[in-house]
Amino acid sequence: MLATFNYQNMKFKTKNSSFLALSMVMSIAFTSLLIGCSDDNNAVPNSGKASLAVINGSAVKSEYYLQVDGSKFHEKALQFSNSVTYAQVQSGSRELLVTKTDNSVVARKTVQVQAQESYSVYIAGVGAQTELVLIQDNLTPPAAGQAGVRFVNMSTAAGAMDVTVAGQSKAIGAGVAFKGSSSYTPVPAGQDLAVEVKTTGSNTIVAQSKVTLESGKIYTLWAKDDLELASSKVAVGLITNK
Image (cartoon, rainbow, N blue to C red; front, side, top):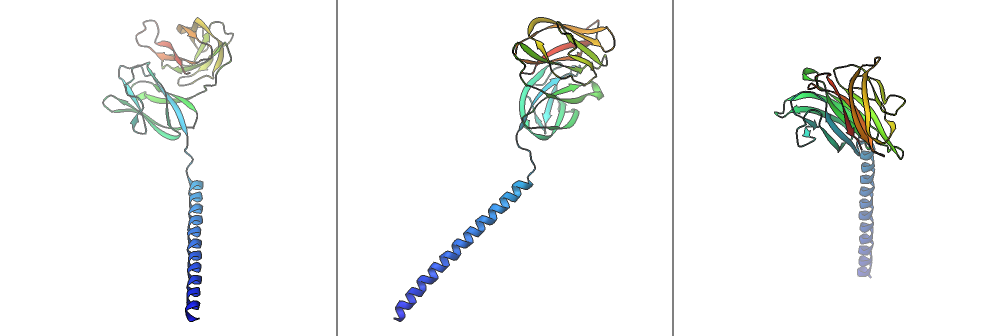
């Protein structure tokens, strides 16, 4: 009788120990889950990517790199008027640097970029006035038969400007100051469309060109310095955003 009693008592203790062990495991798991949820709630929201393009609008012979948070954004140094198409960066606060090929810093700027948004970074000005200009891009497709066009002024030579495209009753951009941008305007697609850039408030044409605009695409007409022109220091270029 004594042996049987001890055996049953051992079985009871074994079951009780297993129950206690299981309870401890579940308690630890539940605590870990709570801690994990707490960490997630306190995390800094910085998920997702933004898209950046870079354009060298600084009318000097030096070639530049753009760095994002200390890393080169593109492999080949940019000459004046050249550009690099969109590439992704982490959203949030980003430090931008412009450097020469010898790694000397020309300009710097801290910017905020949002996830799923697109931006153009212009290198503007010359010498000690070289700076970075961040402009948000709207890549919403235009209606069929239309192109989306905006005007960006990166010329230091002529102050505020107006730009018109042949066949349009109103300017694509009016009174756009240095480092400024107009919103996108729908323009009928076409070939060899005349573009005129004038100083705001006058009929003086400071730059002109002809462009081809394709249906469904998005463009930026931009004023830039051009030291090689004899009659004017302003030129107009066309960038295909999308």
